[in-house]
Image 1 (cartoon, rainbow, N blue to C red):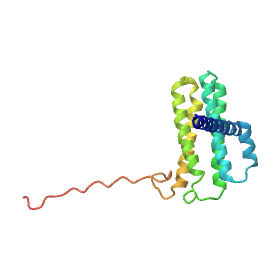
Image 2 (tube, rainbow, N blue to C red):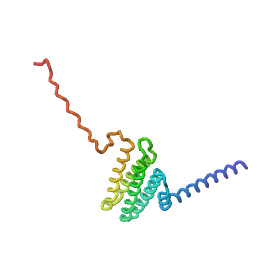
Image 3 (tube, rainbow, N blue to C red):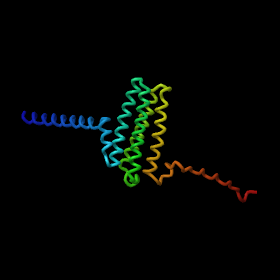
Length: 181
């Protein structure tokens, strides 16, 4: 009986610690906390990751605004989300790091861009045709930014190079049969 009570108490303590850690993380990752950390952070990779978290927060606000029928507010928030992701890219570019050798931060940005594009496209399917323009513009901007990030991550990959245009294959030369006359 005593043993059961001790294990139950341990389970409760673990659950309580998990909830407290979640609340601390949630409080730390609110908009004001993220903006404060971005301002005070010196490491460009950590700064970029905080900008990515800010963009995720803005995207959640975008989805809420559009679901409540506030297209104007949603459009403003979409712009703020795109700006946060562009700031993240700028911090990574200014860090002087080679993405192909030190991908930390660049990979996170690539994943965030891909996920945000998908979520914006999903949201666009539920929004009125007349309210989709900001979402479509954001998708185009984020797709272009993702191409740039991928080009930095994989500089030798010619399929990702925006300036690279593959040459069409040469047509086969006709074979003239010999010995038939």
